[in-house]
Length: 406
Image (cartoon, rainbow, N blue to C red; front, side):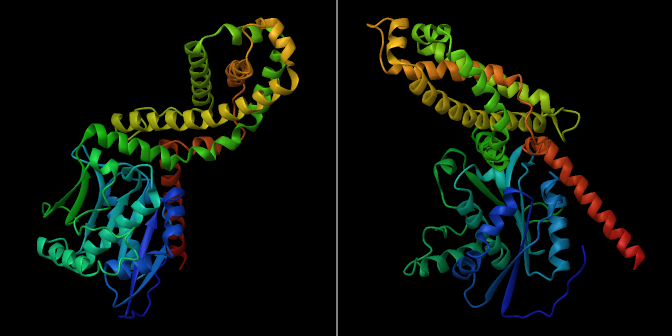
């Protein structure tokens, strides 16, 4: 990256954010305008805060905290930032504990692992975490520094316009919510000498921390981006199911099935669609290509859950279309004759649409080769990580060639 040295204004403090591409970059842009006011309130109101954002592929390509911190220092020095905070969408671990964030007052750099924050509310969690990390870098992480910050917070309680965002504690990464009660975030200081940072925030519970991480990773995958790629599959499935509605077999099935059969057929159809998409697009992460067997399992679980959510959206759309179709094209008298007048009820229309949706989904799964494979594969952690790493290597190679020419 080219250096951009600027004359420093002592009254202006610049915070550089280095997010990974995709969700992390989108959230960073979203909070950019709010952060100066929050930093002024929570850290120091005597200076002007300036925010700069530089999206970096390596931030979302490496699962090594040290590499992320080194990259953050490079960005910070190159652009003469006062502080630098990276936001990765990868899971990070320290001795099998889930790492949420780290900060160094000495180097004035920090990083935040987005998926370890959980699924929602992602914007306020990132804001609160960045406020805490900058505060740790600005005033230090010692007990006395934290006590002084606590006193400053208490003194400002009388003017709490930002009360919904600013935390009450000077040692907490963010406000306590239900997820923090279930999987508490612990703060550790005075780390061993070979560490770059003075403070680290971790989740020790493997079970509740794993659930928090999994939900955050699914959120980072943004399942709603895959849903539009089902247009062709919806057309195939709806055409198939509509043809089946002409025959009374499906009518009789909907009248004979009890609730557990409806649910079993729905689950079977959804899983058939998910499995076929995974196989057709090569989305399964092999242990040999991941950094560790545990990460491979984590990536695969995230991919499956992401696809289940996307297919559920597809299924609900299909159900809505079939429900409209049966109400329009299946006369009540014919359906009553087929099922028996004494057994007929308006709920039979919903049952018929439910059966049609499940059968059509199973058939549609066979044609579920989605149109833009890049979008589908980009929803998997392993593929996204490798793509970013290649982008980063290509960028550095181009920079090296430019330097050689100059």
